[in-house]
Length: 374
Image 1 (cartoon, rainbow, N blue to C red):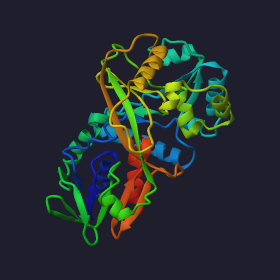
Image 2: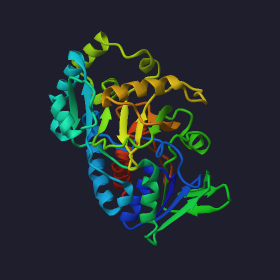
Image 3: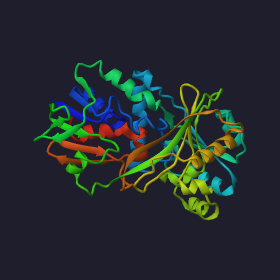
Image 4: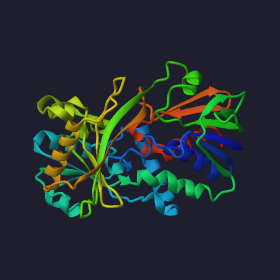
């Protein structure tokens, strides 16, 4: 079988990986020299802890297993099973953490409630004051800026894999063929469009104007090296308001009894923080849903994140070295992990994993491969 994959972000690259692993010939086409979108502009988190129970959690757990397997073959991914800690303060936040630990699927996530001393034994960098911390053993991390490059380097070892960068696919021709903006035609047995947040142009022509996917903009930042290990990923209690796994009567009580900080509420924020291989911290994020998106980044969210992080670390942050905005595609039907649609004979669109893309992409691609009979 010959598979044409359009898009070289993490979802597209994992589809290429699946096809090559199953012995098929793959041509992967990318409009940029390398992917430049949400696949690079994220935390690199393999985030099991907050996933909705059921299909989403099963997908995340399978993807976590696959990331570890691939990471053993491709050290450049920087895979590490670091787990995560979410410190909580006060009775209302503690009750949400207790409800998470009481879930039937808590053991699958590796959820435990730790005292402050127990949390600091796991992550000594957390010197701030907090009541307890929710630990998720199954969370992990990779290096988002280099993961696709490392995967591609491995793929290029196969004679069945070809990468065609700097080519934008403009047209689907007949069944299972595409024409790029160089005028070249790439024919195969199946075409998989993994175009990320690029939802106009050809995608709109193929899927129609009512594609159930929206674009979401976020702001993030990265610091200079911390100077000490941050041994786990770290979240704050605002993540309870954002991730579906924490829905409970306790969360309702938190929302009713403890308002978010004004800046956090205005920008739909949570804290997530991961240490990079160079020792710096990736910190975010905001969520903007209304179009047209702003073209600039705002300082108030960065100030808020800095304040929250410093209160947990009990020390000043290192210098901020980078700030950026990114856009990802998210299914409007939140019960679905991804939008997978046949848009022409032999042509499939796979998009809209939202903030689950880095976590779930290996399992999303595996499901596509299984459903298409690769």
